[in-house]
Image (tube, rainbow, N blue to C red; front, side, top):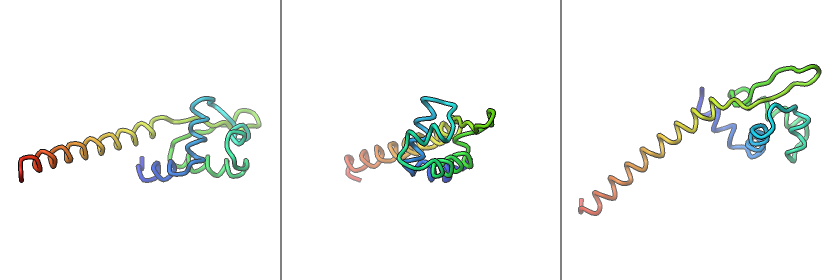
Length: 104
């Protein structure tokens, strides 16, 4: 898992919207997802490919359609990394505050 890839993918608003839509109505086709975002179906397919490349979604064929689902593992791993980072900074800031209040 690459936190950089996940964060890069999540930096785009349309991809975040696609993930939110998939989390509510999964599995969904690109055509169905295109109705939920202000971009073309072709753009949705490209966004889904990026999400699939960083393992945030998975896809499978169901008859003539390709359906997409959220893979929560990568989101959870990235959230865990972010939580650890935030905790570290909170601890550092608390120590800095304590040192400043003690005069040095």
